[in-house]
Amino acid sequence: MKGGEAAKWVDEDMADYFLADAQAYVRNNKNRPFFLYYALQQPHVPRTPHPRFVGKSGMGPRGDVIVEADWVIGEFMETLESEGLTENTLIVFSSDNGPVVNDGYYDDAVEKLGDHKPADPLRGGKYSLFEAGTRVPFITFWKGTIKPGVSEAMVSQLDHIFFFGSLGQ
Image (cartoon, rainbow, N blue to C red):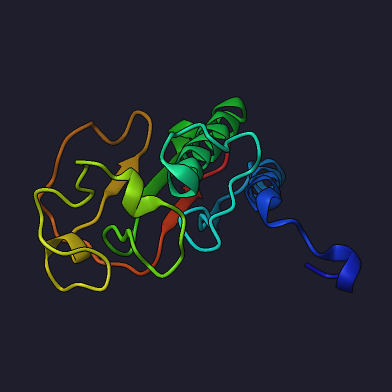
């Protein structure tokens, strides 16, 4: 952000800033083809959920930022729908690696797991060459074009991604 000290944001507000910018981009470019790469900051440190989401998951800050990420995606999808773009927009949601619980950032994640195994039944996780480190969600949506289903195709990319390619109206 530009403007020096006066432009610094509050970590808890980052999702709102990024969402508003992404929504504005779509509204400003809806009548022509566009590409939007929307990287979610929520799963990364520092995990600082907005106060609206604190305590919502029962899983501490890590769970709360996942609830926040889900909300952000829903809000963005509503923007695409209200702008009439879901039938002209390819949406891809994915991740760059599997789960990590203890990444040196103390947030009660290990203690709150209980019997839950984030990578189950796969071996490993983030930083691992085993399946849970490399097999990640890759979800696509294109209303009226992509039929729901499961594919065994291999896909590879880097970092958490949520991007949209639109043909405009």
